[in-house]
Image 1: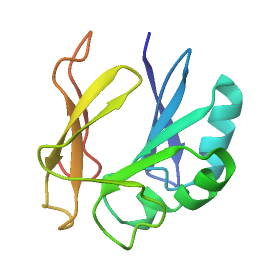
Image 2 (image 1 turned 180 degrees about the vertical axis):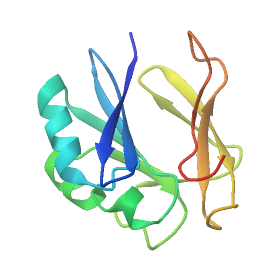
Image 3 (image 1 turned 135 degrees about the vertical axis):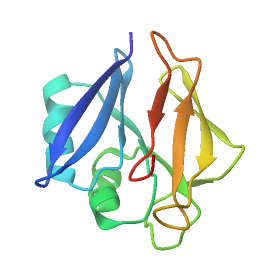
Length: 133
């Protein structure tokens, strides 16, 4: 069963932790230290990272987490985001722990901003929208 937990970061942000028995993914890890603590606590491998846009408070921990865990890193096509292995845009999708997320382009906050939407997730739809709603 998929579990979703907020990880407090900085003074006013959250990094989302998605995990089940097979492993974990995080959304917008601006701070690697709090993610590492959460991964240690749940004792699951970090399998992937979802990035919504290039701002440091959403990407600052990517390089350290990638070096430590070798997760799959997906995000928008922007060379400023170091470590993205799969660039996604409108119409693409990504599977995360058995949930299929559609990628939406939402350029209201930054031009490269994307969101991840799973309308068929249960018990309710899921949306990870970074700084754009």
